[in-house]
Length: 201
Image (cartoon, rainbow, N blue to C red):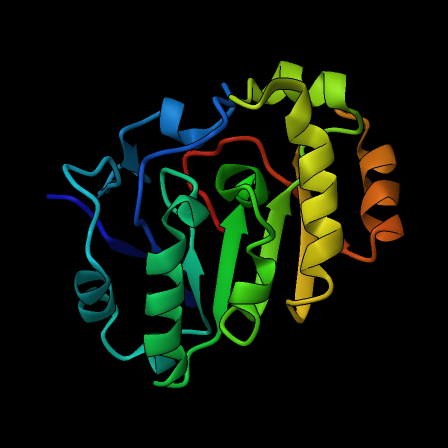
């Protein structure tokens, strides 16, 4: 059975799509079809807004509700907005984990549409330059992807209260260079662990 929602610690995660504009070989989705060996995150179909809201139940039971599954959630921008509004009305704090490609995908700046709906956004910076980013992420957007991610982080600061840039802890990534990029953009920085069987979020 597909998992639309799955808990990690005090947070509840929402799995709304398996589509993604990156093909990162380090991504957990290429390691296992089940997350933590129990949550079936490969979807037979994408859930509706109503199905997601129903699966969440009372959002106040959780520290935060996080859009983050086996795909890029902002590919389903309207669903993200509808679900976020419904859950915010029930007192939820909303976070979204994204690869930062949404403005490329929609060919417009979508971040103002998330203002007042998303409390925290975590954006995968993943590398210190465009060449390494493409090497690591194999984006469908090629050389356009990395500068778009940088711009997305910059624009997010104008619309979202908390903005974080992250990289995966891989040997080829210059973590300190990435930290400086994040700080220069006004974002906080977080180093994500490489895939672990017991992921802690």
